[in-house]
Image (cartoon, rainbow, N blue to C red; front, side):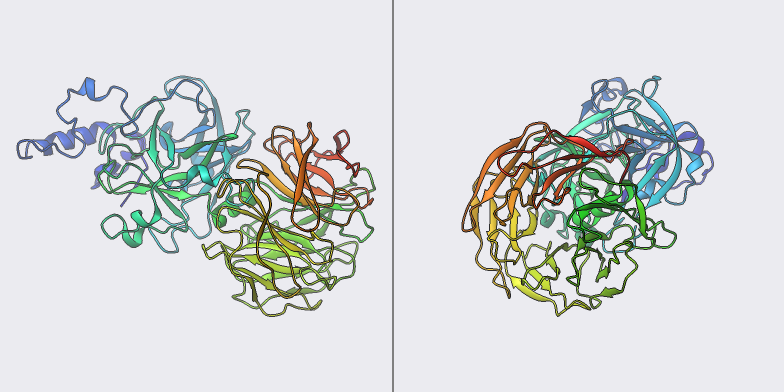
Length: 606
């Protein structure tokens, strides 16, 4: 197993006793392979040889391995991570101040030793931007679980924001485009790494298309066996070899074209050799629930909407998600005054570290929404006192939650208290419920045997106005683009039925809310091209959809709904989560549309 780092010459000189050809600089590797080639039997090319081509021909742009040169400016988010002025790993700009790369590239290094070059296609040019690194955040479980180089992720915080457009990260259950990176799909990997195994790197960015492979194939004993962990790895490359990432490409992006543009779903991690038969490239699966959740919690705060003080108007809440040991783990609230949100106030100073899922819901039925956290093994709640979240803290038993579960909060039995609902992401489609007692959780009980399987977007809302929240899932390209409902009986969820045959296709962001005055929850979808469609529930079997707004929500916003002005109608809310960190609102008219969008807060949840 080889990581895919390429150490620059200046660094290699510090290791004169290097035994691994992958760690030699390009000219040393060529010399070694040339010497070894003399000992090869006739007709057998040495590893890293030019396969009978003269060097000039071999160095023509076939590259990354088996690919070709990228066009100038084609990948403005691509990053060269450099040591002592030399490229050694790739990365991708995923937010103005954050670069995503592989943990094995930067683990143990200091921020001051690294330089990032952003948006430069030819490394010999002066194009693009150069930024220093202020902080390195390595995944806390890097190389500690099953498989080789598991959780191989790190984020670099830049000293100043880049002006280049970041690449979008593929999400498993929010605006899901998962159908685009299913096995058999063609993905693109880019980098400045070796042109063939043991060969020289290139100064011009290369690209190659590789097929996404089934997990079962990669886990075969004759391929990678137990070294491949499908929870955090994805394999890509022709089974017969010939196309692959290679040394020097580590940390770079594995991407697919989707309905909304390029999305990154993998990070170059490791492989055996380069472009060998039955030895595909292995990438860190950032589109998995557990890894995507961790990435989001480092890059951005987590904004939510709920009535924290019980005045009937929804407020905005944000979780800062700091380090588990050092923080910050703050929760801020900006209260609604009916038209905008007041100043952000600290309501809790130690809650929901990186990788935990924050949530909002009324645990004890007092009319005030409390804060929740779904951790790797438990569900936690801290009660609102109307001015902070320093009330009593409750938790479920250890082992009642799983790192890959999708946690949701809603009152599923109609007793006025919100409960914990866990959607399994293990392929079973099980839905488990832990009912709130107001001072604790009841036992974990299965309420549905197959709902919202992997790749769909599950939600909860009372679609038939019986005071019990029902299951809703948006298939989002995994099975057409359907909205499916299973009604709550108060002790389980009934049979699933299709309530809309075409709603929230892949790439859109679905939501639920009460958009008119009939007390039945409706569905909405943000196209991310400014249109918002609403599906009105008839309470029995249908969401009738129509366009309600054509000027709300940018593609990179965090989009949701909530009753900002307390009129019983849910409104549109967008958190830009960029350098301005604006919060936009468009009020529902309760009939057929939303009003003109306006800024309701000018800095919240960056």
